Image 1 (cartoon, one colour):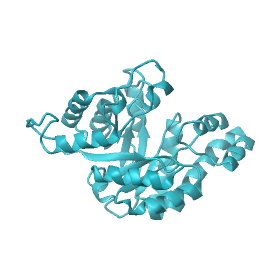
Image 2 (tube, one colour; image 1 turned 30 degrees about the vertical axis):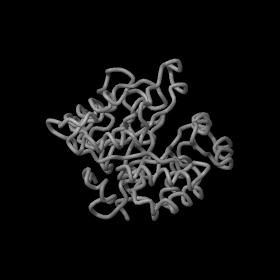
Image 3 (tube, helix red, strand yellow; image 1 turned 45 degrees about the vertical axis):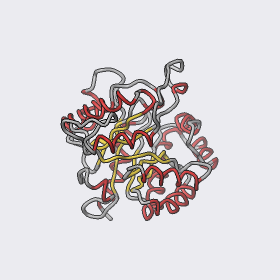
Length: 300
């Protein structure tokens, strides 16, 4: 189903069907082969979203790992880049390096607070936020650096952004999304959603923002894992779903999570351009969900 990076600009696959993106977390260490092997030969997925030390937990460079996934697995990476860990010199340098390695799309993130991660006493940089990073992308794409000097070879990144459909103030979140679009964002990957009605309401309202929204869907393998997800800042879990999961036999929880994700996908499909499967701590379950969604998309 791979449709190429150009489909992020149009927001559609060549067949006019929803796009499908699968989140991939780089390893904590240099042993990359087991992770690459997991995704080698993967079909039915248009893109992989490669994270950047998500939740401030150190992992191998997402920019490098995204390039490796493209080179070794033939998968088009949408690579997260966080402002938390880099000043504007490092951001420019890393972006030039990633382009040279074949990365063609960057998801601009302000970044999670360091206090939620493994090294809470580390110092966050945050010299710019996601809007500032979008400006840097536009500058490098124009053939200049931030000092106004000409580049010897410019970039041509397709910029992405993130959006949170779980936000308490829906209108304010949509206004932020519009500002990101005005700053150059062409598509958005959303935080995972579990509340069907809230998801439908948000993406219906956001459909006019002029950006290709991809709804986040996250499977979970146990009630304990789901309770942990419910505590993540920016995530909203309906009390009824949480109680349903707690009451279910443990062996049924994964199936419930996949069924709920597919129900959300079906309901929000008229208002989004595609689906973003969030792996969290369950990469194999995310693969299972992505394959189920892929089969459904093929049948549309």
